[in-house]
Length: 440
Image 1 (tube, one colour):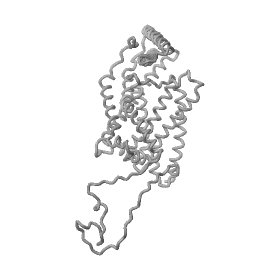
Image 2 (cartoon, one colour):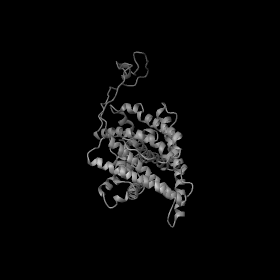
Image 3 (cartoon, rainbow, N blue to C red):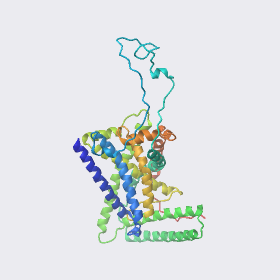
Image 4 (cartoon, one colour):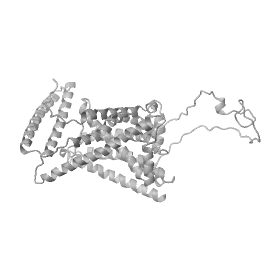
């Protein structure tokens, strides 16, 4: 068992280093060229925030893996302890009698005037043990509630949009390379749309300088942002359909492979999404649960190899976080009052980075709480289960949100509505963007 503990510590250190390297890689490759060699403080915040969120979520599967080790595990000392002070109940002792009789007036052993506490109390009474929580736990609870609201909305929508969006992208992929004349025609239309957007943007800048920033101005800004995003998508699609350069054939082959990868990832993601929704319904919403479902799957994977179930557990946790980002992007395209902050390879502005990192940090605690509740059978007897499964859900004022599964029900409802929406409209080909109109 000592070897398992040492291996667990080594894995934890290696994973932390890998998380930092991966986050640096994402920052370098996702950042916009205009942000290169500048804005170092926001970049530091981005890397730090992503690392904290990732390691925080990974602490949950690490907590589960540590439970499997011996009780004197090497890094047990790093986990804090919470002491609950209770009043001890005392009673006198008596010699065990050689014979006794039970009756309605005497339910306890002995002949003295002694009654059991359950007998002496009112039959309809219920005793509630109350203790004060620590300030950090209360802050975590409030943060979790705030994050759970965004997690329920964005995660519920995103868990359906993430896999179905990948599958839809494969369905609408370019089937063949277009001719040069077609390319020129499409490029001319895109250039015309770009000029219209530039003109509209200049007009909005003039209104901003004049101090005219009312509701109409904000709505027009959102319209221009949406049209600009759609224009960029159309430009990228046109470049895919007409690869240029000396290695045009290799570029086209990589494009086809990329869409095949989206199909594979979309199918795998759809399986994970359906498994998530089914698990929430079977294990959380139905009382008593019909089955432990994914909890049993993780336990069987652990039986195959010590950390295999833990790895699968971590994948399911991270998948929820990716769903939140996808849902925020999808809702941002549909609703006026939510700003669009897309994450694009080589074209992500720093304000979009900071927005998504803030959203990830806010929802990361909620993801941990959600997973600790959804996988309560698998994560039992862990520190996370104690904090998020008992202490947080028993706090006055917010206990009813968890008692009646408000967030879980909202998550499943939004996921179901999004699945229906995609089934009805998502498979259709996108119509060419018409000339946009600003509010007057």
